[in-house]
Image (cartoon, rainbow, N blue to C red; front, side):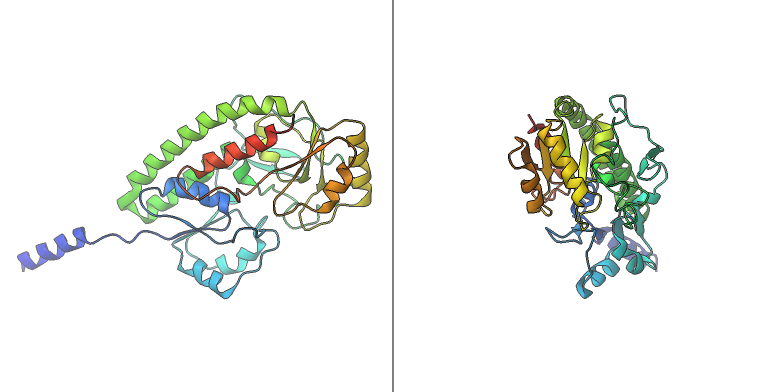
Length: 313
């Protein structure tokens, strides 16, 4: 009997442990998850390339992917409202806007909470509602309170990484040390890249720029930048006529040198407003569509965003 028990125990030890299935709603969260699961598994991303979390509709196959995942990582109802119902009974859904210690910014109160960014962060100057009709669009579900674009802040990204590593360590104690080591490596790499990018961003703020939609606040506050304004609060809302007149006037008066469109939302209205003003129309990829998923993809994402901002000369 003892021999049988010993053999059973040995077999249990030698059997391969099933890798946890990690599912993130959007690609940037997949970048961070991939750094933490490196050497253990590869995360999956729910939204396909080009899809926007602002207006995504789940298919039956998506519901199956959610139900099959051991851990689902999402920002929260502020961004992916379509996930609220399918995640209501999921045992392991990591809601990032509810992670303790997450530095959050509130659009309405214009205040940051739990914000402990490092020494070169400066509060962005100027009013982010400048160049837009009052608080038009703030009734939209994802822009009436918390700014949900957490992955655009290096400090927030490290909190996300820690939350993922902690949750995976609980579910998969056999690989807990690996997750912890990956987290330490991620933090160190992000800090190193952050220092380089901080130098790049100093010059950009002096040029003046407009963004297509109000998504870059975490990045801007972290690096002491501030846009002159935005075309729209939410991508699915068309900018108002008054907004367009004000932006064109600002461009003609050379208050801004650049306008940043986005790959998935680059309406002709931007080209129209910029025409004959001398302003450059550039692209910002807020979700890293062109970045392949891998353990160092978040660093690549940070750099491509910095390089895009730095094109404003």
